[in-house]
Image (cartoon, rainbow, N blue to C red):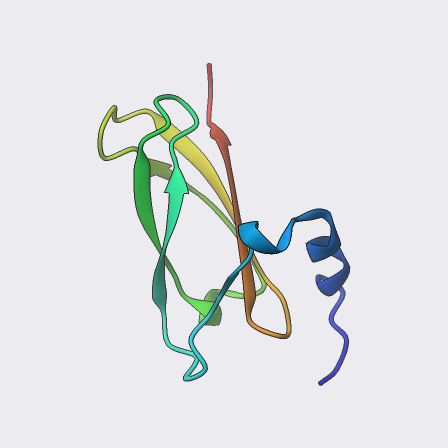
Length: 87
């Protein structure tokens, strides 16, 4: 498989923080934890959106906006990072 420019970014994340897209390439839900309250939330990751996706998702518990960054490498590994959109 061809080396992708985003592959190197995954070296910064421990294996336990990496998740995998299904082999069929369909969208899949993955968890993230709210940056404000720490509660688990789920976000739909669609690989057709590209290898790096960034958008705002409100927490289902506290309603605070989380700025979500999703990275998908050429091997289907997924890393989700999130921060509060504003303080």
